[in-house]
Structure formats: structure tokens, C-alpha cells
Image (tube, rainbow, N blue to C red; front, top):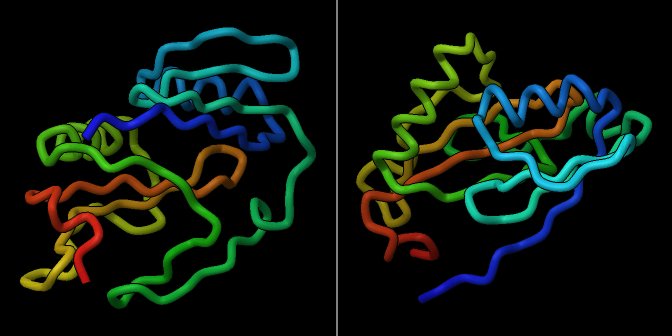
Length: 141
């Protein structure tokens, strides 16, 4: 099934730091930009960082328990192939990334088994990157 690219615009209170993070740490290609916003190619999707005062969720993230971990809410991310996820985890470790939830496999042996990791961008936006060995398990109950 071919997916349509999504468009996601998020607030960042430090545009230069966020631009460096998404561009250099993740290696995302930059598209259009202005003094207040920057477009990135986020794995084929359009991610836009907009300069904005710090939000309450960026200052202090709420969490919900999932598989024994405190998952930050709100968060966003992408589902990668298993090899892409492993390569990204290694890249992020190489950049000295501080993870909210270190890369690991959750729901082991259960429907929806997945690799996941959580981190914050420099402005406190939470991101999750995950992978399934069987993409048919994406919505498994």
C-alpha cells in the first residue's frame, strides 16, 4: 500500500538548535525556509519546525506507562524498516544522544512486538522511532 506523505508542523523555541538537530543529527534534507521556519524531508514526509515560545509539554512532558517505561506524551515519529532502525540507533548513539527510553525491543513474543526508542529534540519535542520485523504487526492486537 502506498502511503501519502504527511505534513507535521511543530513548535521550536530555539530554531538554530532545532535546525542543526534535524539536519545534522538525523541527516534530514532541508527544503524551504524563512527566518521563522524550516521544512525537512522526514523520511519522505514534510516536517516543519516553526519558531514559537516554549510550550508546557516541551517544558515538562506528561508520560503514560507502556511496557514498563514512561512514554512521553505528546510525541511523534516514524516506523522504519528493522535495518534502518538499527542504523539510526547507532547513528544517534554516535552523536551522544541522551535517550528518554533507550533503544530496545518491547512486547517481546506478543502481537505488535517492536523495536523502539524515544528522545527529545533540543526544544523538548518527544520523538519515537520504531520498527517491526513483520510490518503486518503494525496494528496487531
